[in-house]
Length: 391
Image (cartoon, rainbow, N blue to C red; front, side, top):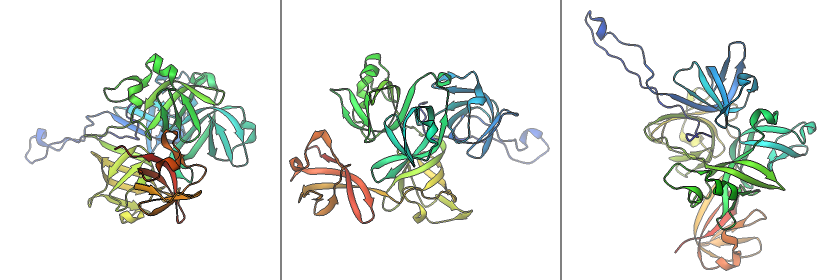
C-alpha cells in the first residue's frame, strides 16, 4: 500500500481573480487544479466500454491498473465492483488505479456463514465451491465482541498468476516479540517477520529502520505480504500503515472504530484520527444532525482539513454496522476472581479472548497499576488486553 493509506482526496486549490472593468485579464477565471489528487474507496461501477470506473460516487477514466506497485497487463478487465482501490491522478482523466485489498490468499475453510483465509475467520456467506480457491478480500475494520475485526465488502475469486502468487494480510499488530521476530495480526494469525527483517523489508514513515519500525507499533494497522506456511504467515515485507494529512484536505470513507465520550475526537478505520468542532457539519438523510448521531460502527464519509472534520455524512443505508463500543481503564488492579477483576473498584469481566501482555498471569498484576482495553457487550465491560503500566 502506498504511504498515504487513508482514503484521501488532497485539496484542490481554486484560483481566480475578481473585479470589474473591461479588461478581460481581471475577469473571474475558472477553477484550476494545482495539486495531485489521491482517492481511496471501493469501486461502485465499472464501464469497460468507456474505460471508466466510479469510486465514492465520482467517475474516473482509467489510464492503467497496478497491484503491489506493479502494472497489470489486463488493466480494467481485472477490476470488479466493491474492490478497494486507490486512485492517483492530476485530473479525473487518465487515473492510475492501485488495487488495495485487505487479504489475498487461499480459502482454507467455509461454514454456513463464515470462511477462513490466511488464518483469519471472517463472517460472510460464501459458495462452498470456493474452498481451496485464491481470493481477494476487501474489508473495513469494525469493533466486534472479540476486539477489532473485519466488515467484509467483497470476496473475489482471482487467478493467482495475475497478482504475483503472493499472500497479503492487513490488520492491527499485537503481541510483538522482538526476540522471536513474530507478532500477531488481531488475535488469530501469527506473523513471522524474520525474513523481512533480514531483507530490510520493514517500512515506516519516520527515520527508524528495520525492526525499530515495529517498536511501539503495538495496535497500529500493518500490511504484510509473503506466504502462509503451516498456519504461520511468513512475511517478506512489513509496512506500518499510517497517515499524514498535515496541510491536506482529505476525504475518507469508512467505519468509526473509536470515539471519545463527548464526541469531539474519533478514529476512522482504526488508523485515521479526526477532531470535531462547532463548525463541523454532520449530515444524515439530507438533513443536518447533531454529533450525538455518531457512534462506534457508524459508516461515514468525512471531509477534513488538518485533521479537523469539516463535513461528515452518515450513510443512510448502513449507518451503523456495530452495536459495540471500546473502552479503556487505568488504575490499580484488584479483586481477581475466575471471571472478573476490578480497576480502582470498577468491575471488568474476563473471557477466553482476554490477553495479558508479556505472557504474565493476571494474578501477577494484583496490586499493580495497569492499563485495560476492551469492549462493552450489553452492560458488561469485557477486557481484551491487560498491560502493566510502566513505572
